[in-house]
Image 1 (tube, rainbow, N blue to C red):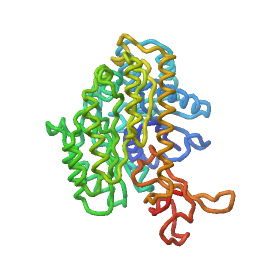
Image 2 (cartoon, helix red, strand yellow):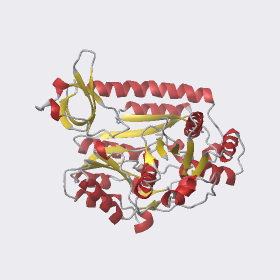
Image 3 (cartoon, rainbow, N blue to C red):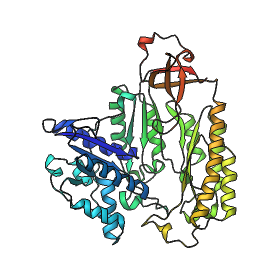
Image 4 (cartoon, rainbow, N blue to C red):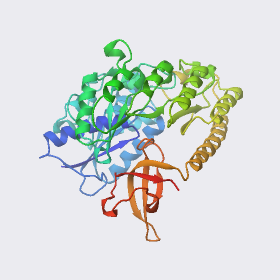
Length: 448
């Protein structure tokens, strides 16, 4: 059977997909053959995996299923998206257009489902049955996984699953349950395997990396883990994503300044600046503390990259609260900002809050914030012009003028998230034989 995968949105889910891919390729290569294009004629079954805690992402999954059905593909839906409907929607007795679609899919003979336990203990027979029963069945996998990004010289390690934060707008703890961390030894051993495969960059993932290890070691152990990672030999770098700011301190940041392999990339999901709104979001930090952390980063790292996200129009947000957020954005701390318009997400605590901001006002505020963010980030890109960088080639192409140009990801920027540079060959600084340059080569260049 020819099979393929579609993984939407989430790189934490991608790691789960990689575990399943390895299971299939390692044990059942006689039964399955992998194809890169899920919509190709030869592909018979497609495994789908995506985030499910935002309604627009669930909508995208429904659309993807419909597209595959039109191509007469068999479909196997993996854990996280299924968990929303089978565990949360049914448990909370939700009946709406989404759940009706889901019930129709459950009765489709060409659609099957895999729970987390079944992903970890996959056999070909599991995709032949139309329905499964889902519950709190998370099992931390101990098998190897297929490293799908390793040819690009980077790969992810998910250091923990689940979340303990219970932010009022988020249902992830209900889908993923409390945090379960991977032991330090397992993470270090996997890092060693990746290094042996010539990985140049390791990206550490969790829903909240800052709280890594609190379930195993009774206190957060992220920075102790980073010290162990930093002591590994060979020429590689690592970065950390999703560092929640509430227990992050200047002492932690001071430790990061001493680490030689750490990429000073700070992914801090701040959500807002107003103390009142942060409190209603159940985000337990204040704006003064945030400013102290941001100023420390600016003052103590020669090169740094700060990424964040904000929710506009959260319940109780007044014009004064919004103006406070705009004022904060104007201080221009950030290299990348993701903006979200608030909407009620079923099963989230914020959906029950009074004093909702009307949709028209939310949209107006979002567009004001977006215009400001677009201008600030565009100005930052202008300021990067004619400066020297080191980066990794992700594409090489021939222009209409019959000259070669390169797409290069600066080392500080995160793969699959941040911008890349378009560079003409003449602006590559070191002398290369053109035949030696290839995708994923590291080069120094001028961003002209």
